[in-house]
Image 1 (cartoon, helix red, strand yellow):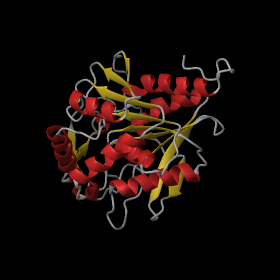
Image 2 (spheres, one colour):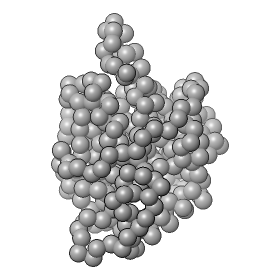
Image 3 (cartoon, one colour):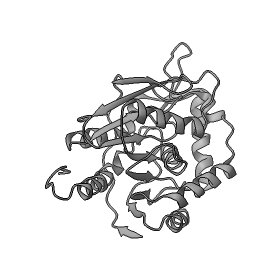
Image 4 (cartoon, one colour):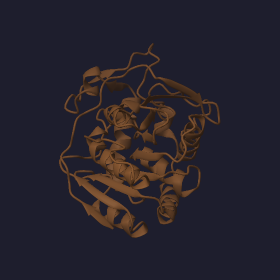
Length: 293
């Protein structure tokens, strides 16, 4: 295990904009996403957490694109501009298959996977269970062992928003803007599909799958955790590093478990540095192939 020093938290995501990609999942759900950079560059897929959208990674995507990578971020099913499954199937299995479909449809050969929270679990399972052949894996605030109190807090927030309230526009820009407003009954734009919150989850089975996947990892792997996260503890980190001893670990000061109104870009610079190192290691004879300045 290699230890890396903590870094300070960064900036929040930019506001919504129309998606640049739309594609169909294996079961027909419309998936919406954005991309940055040259499609011939090393591909990077950015996955958000529960209740977030693709915009939680916008600045990281732009930074990767400017450095020569091809970055894409998609709204998960039941989130943002992506469709709501007609059968209410918002399961982790369905999300893994969606990730497989995104990589295949965009011709992304051996992508780097960067996943926060639920998106990280999707990425870990996709690699460990053989759905996606990735060149590197970056996990943000996710491990097989999670803290029940933190998970319950997030689920409670999602249920509260789904049952009658949604974040104000200002909350997109600031985690301090925790103002809520009643949902417009005539609006078709809600934060996420209420079925996502209600979908039955067997946490014991989920943990078994995540543990098995972590033990199978052989690709370059980075785990990042906000030091104030109440979802992943240091004990959860230690267990993951036992399963995957070659993984690197970063703890970020002044960062917690990003909520629906916050973004994941506070982890973007560290992710960028790691991805650049992977790219340079693949082509050691090419100097300044990718620039993370």
